[in-house]
Length: 275
Image 1 (cartoon, rainbow, N blue to C red):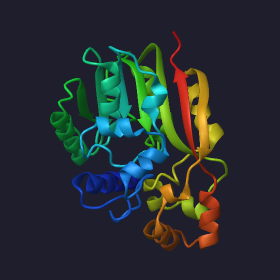
Image 2: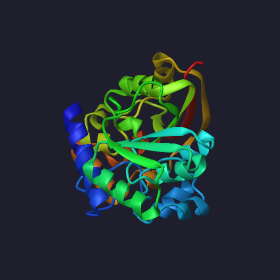
Image 3: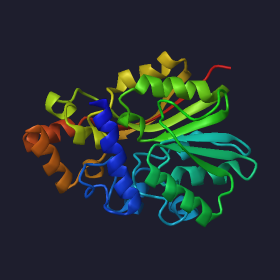
Image 4: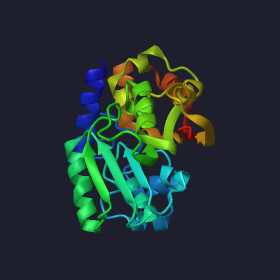
């Protein structure tokens, strides 16, 4: 099933990158988003100024928070973005670290990489580089990064412990991992856990909150802290098309699905690699 999930994620986000559909018209449910990326971005913590800093087409509305605001990036730092998509967070980070800093975005989807690279050229972001790779096996040297950011991506991985151990490996001693992600306040029904569409849609692969936080510590991170946590709006998880797809695949009632989705939380977490 893990290979099927990765394949479906790649296919769904490839279609979004090519402009063949929004989050709800790709043939698969897609991660937390909205047909109106700007509207969603405001709702989850991006300012109007930030959205105006990036090239058109970089903000695809695929996040669930603003990890750049969380990261407190400094001039000259080297920063990695896990699952960089169209490059939205990378470009915001690039403006914070300045010309002496460097941003590396990693994504597994060719069409997303092409879109991100085109956006970088369009916006003349010379300090941003996009690499193809998996977040479970990063194409990055040991102890290379000052900071890592990730926005609603780790929940898509079926090997989350590998993601955290890889993040730990590539961070410099004292470096920080800053993530915005979806977690669960309660267990999902088995029907939803077994749904590939629900995995692609950032739901079925989400960890229980405490399990997610323990993964930081298991990988070796210290000073792990929850910066913020809130109910993730239902309209940001699904629209009518997505709900119909979930219902058809899982056999759940609308009441059962609504109850399951009510336990989804948006969380922002910071952890450090010990010095």
